[in-house]
Length: 297
Image 1 (cartoon, rainbow, N blue to C red):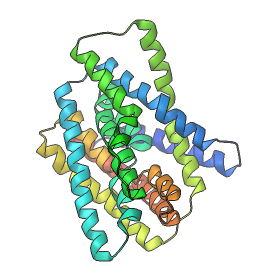
Image 2: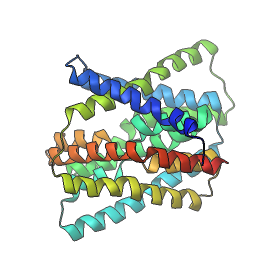
Image 3: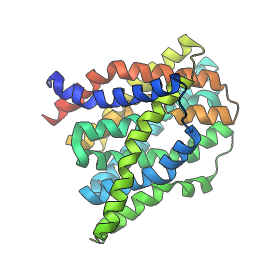
Image 4: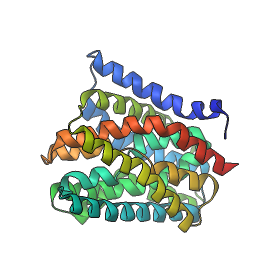
């Protein structure tokens, strides 16, 4: 088992910065959640993705395998979740997105950065970008009851990762002043993600505790099992395999609650799933990180 200091070095920054956001909100300090979310989605995250790709120049074939593994994870998880919801007679529009789409941005990217370094972050963004495109198209479509293919092309993450891959394929380097600018803006993304996560947790309350716990166990435990299987099926090794396993085992994403609130899909219950799954993941993170670090040994 990896030394406890190595594990703490990975998970402590995630918890501490999230806690700072939580305390900030509980103290009644101003925090414009909508503005921060728009800034992170439209500016910070695209720069983070582009910077991670161009600074580390990962193998495009490996990134394609990670994207394929991501789709496999989401499909398998979605099929199982759909079956569970049908048997339990629970509304798919309410619970399916919360069971499928994890918090691969706010929590997953920082964990992969601290666990595997900048090169690992570059691999993790392939998972995050692929899920983001599907979450803001199919996931939002499930919540709204109407899936639109046009929404796929509205994701800034899609264009950032496409541009990065095109520059790598063409062996093109951006001017230094431009890379420095992108890198500086990229540095905003992860701290803002974690602060926003803490603020969100302080703003949400738990409704339907028993159901939230069961769904949360599915998100974290089921996601881990499916991610492990998908990474094996795609022939991933080392940091690539670790990144897929970590991202697959993330708690339910905050955006699931935002979509539920927007389309009036029992937002209080979805908020409970987000809160409980996040707290559960914080408890299981030491075991998860110990496992993925052992894969690198």
